[in-house]
Image (cartoon, rainbow, N blue to C red):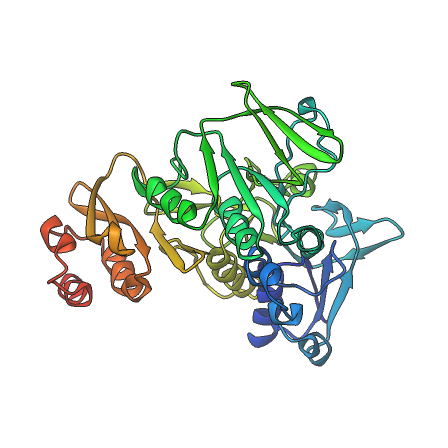
Length: 408
């Protein structure tokens, strides 16, 4: 008898897993259950092209609509799974349910909300879904003023998009520098200069104390007494994993669903992939949770293969990117404060690479308008061999040549 495989989720990981299962030969019943009504789609365009251009949302689809019909993938959109019975292998939702043989949980994340104690937060917008993006797009009109609470990647991408649309933009960041928890010291100052050059006002070391409305205008009062007014407030203060179903089902969870390198959970016949997972990374020597396109893509394919009994593992050098104006930033590995930092190129020229070494080993790289260096830098990190710092920092030594020497 044919088996039934179920996938919970409607994003990158869910769409890739469905495609991989069919490509790898699964011929049984395949059911994809998503809380959003749309077919699985990518989220990176939502903060950029979707807002600033006449963007055809179909381009964000993980698979063409015909894929699901042609490959007999049953898509149940707009359905919120309310219970996973891990032992009984059954999903339940209002008005229905499904028995499964194997399950993939790819439920992603949700925005972290501002605390209600701040006051009138009902009108604050957040970005996670295409529905959120549509609301933000409708509100971003030329000449309107926008306050962005949070100077992380999403907040800064939204700032760039709002400026492209002719909005007045103020970013409020609680830390003393942009991205200070994620990137090397000094990089935040560079990025702040980029935004300032495009007319964005950035205030650091400020924490909202109250949010309200006065005469149709949003008012944000900060702990230091300063007040900021705008037509619109958008918050980007991080995300939380949608692991509630997994917790209730008794799966091992700790700020995300705990999985191994094969994307297996603590329950037989259940796998998980994407932003919702916490998984082991050899480079770090610990489990991490990553909210990146690349991780969702690769981990979902690994999960699908292992659901079919293949031996596939997920242990890649982490990679992510962000585009802000004409500045492309790509990050490899895990930037950390205990690394010695080297710069290849000049920050003032707008194209450079920041590299972090610890104990003689390359641990991470931040590439600014230098995407061509990603492959050799990935090889150098993966090789796990000591590298002379002077060679890394010397533009006269091609990184491709250095990688070839190290890997040989």
